[in-house]
Image (tube, rainbow, N blue to C red):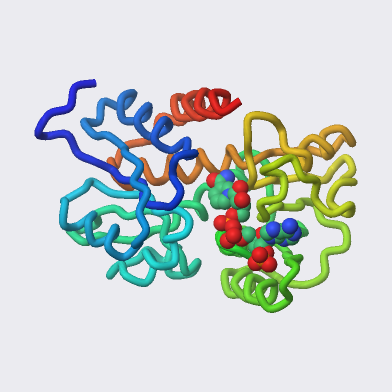
Length: 270
Ligand code: NDP
């Protein structure tokens, strides 16, 4: 790839960013699609200044990650409907000349629900966790018209995510025998198991972990061992990346190339 004065820049804005697979995934996608752009990670302490820099420097776009997704939502002047519903922005792109905030985590999860999980309207889902990833899942579950229960250690946070799922189109209530359990906590990042009730899924049930790593997480491994289906967070990672690529370039994302780049980046982590 040759960089010239015409090359456009897409930024990853977050703290920390050193572990991110996104530069490998997006640069592989730009190269495969013949887009004259590069994707660079910036470890930034001020989310609002970083979002302002996207305009000031005329970047092609940006991803926003932890801990700046809420600040990006607050400071960006235009938001997609999905970003407005979720209260967080993970992608900045130009639409009709305006810098616009989107939340492609929701679209990434919707893709996983359709392509991997086969989620149907009325399916029962237990969502474990009540942070940013759980909020994106709540909006995506609402759009799938699932029946959702939220389990989290802080009752007020769980109730807020239930309300978000409800306002996004889900039915909210007890789900004693879920078809799908989603882990939206960091448990598993360092090999931790989930609470016992989530480690005993049976055939017909689906473990969807938003955590991912070089090996299957304990939640996914336990589900598969017991005959249930298990998917880790790669699908969400790739789904949000593909949607962001399409916002920036208006071209279909080269998903197979992006998946291969993510695999290489993850295996290099060991
Ligand atoms: P947040 O910090 O916003 O939320 C984490 C949630 O997990 C909170 O509800 C928190 O509870 C809860 N939690 C943390 N530790 C425990 C524990 N030991 N027991 C029970 N609950 C716990 O993080 P995010 O929502 O942004 O991300 C969560 C995970 O999802 C990340 O670790 C990441 O691995 C994954 N993720 C994956 C993505 C992908 O593309 N695949 C994208 C984004 C996230 P409390 O509020 O009480 O601390």
